[in-house]
Image 1 (cartoon, protein in one colour):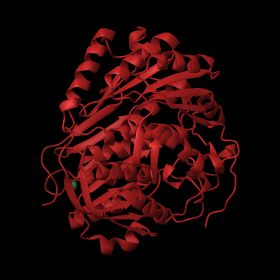
Image 2: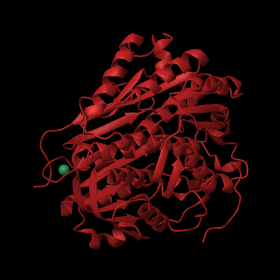
Image 3: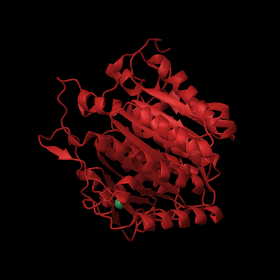
Image 4: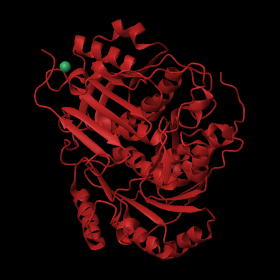
Length: 483
Ligand SMILES: [Zn+2]
């Protein structure tokens, strides 16, 4: 059993140090939501450590899973209750407040009320994060942005997700960013996408995790302004982007039909594994995936430093095996029948038993371990989703034997080397969960979430050095490995 202690603010470890984390603490996020899956945005924002999070909106749900807890009632109240129950009461001074503004966003009084809440909020930074799905609510957000002057990001869910740095575009501060699009154009695009979604067969709920990761990455870095990347001397400026779309044209479109996978093994139940689990569970619950058996493999126990970031381990789980807690909670996340197993072991210790697994999803944290798993996948011709993250960037690829390239050929895996770690200094895991969220979600969506898998590698970076929205780069291949 884990120890029941109240943890202190030291938990809010960030790669930008205390000062950077302090900036996030002085930030209020106003998440506008009319779809219960927006709870994912609130929970991930809590994990990053924003000071005030308001979940604005209401929707009555019945037997809805807020992560691993069954809830009936108003989802925004349920989300607050969840965070208080599993995170808040274990923290002494996290300096974070999550509040539900349970209000009908279509009502006449809503605009004035929410405007007043934003006006009287005393935070240094105020950000509106629109995760709504209804056109009326989008218009509400647009008006709210005008009335409050708050930084506003908008997500439009329609056969994918389109993100706009709306306030930058509308206020004309886009000269530095790669968009010449006018506000009227954005309004028309918003309208067209929402109309299209009404008749689409592709659901949108499995895109909330990706939208949250992408948007919270933008917000977190924007709040930092100048930042120093670990291992580098020079400060960087946040490189803004006006828009991001996923999937964009170089990526395969999303799938609307159901895919059956007999058995999945998730190797690594850490930062990537946490969000793989959420992505997979959401797709199972939407009927996009049918899985008979899922196995979580991880040799580690849950430590204090995982607690605030890896949201599946919220609650009194310190000291317990990661794989066991993940398996137990995953079972509660899904509605249907599913066999969930856990292995408190390293991959190579149990690989003999995994030769017939239908899919390996890998989220281990060293190149050495990734090579080991990829060698196994190639040798036994097992499909493999492989992703890696370092601070502000990462990459993901999918190996489908006889269909796509393996990671040795697509991303030169053999040549990757882990940095030498100085054992004498304490190695504190950095808080980059938004990068983990984005990459784990994208890895699932470009492989088993797509109509056909991406044959290649998707690279993502928040530092602005890629050509696609300054965030993405795709390397695509013809041909395959497996012969
Ligand atoms: Zn190969």
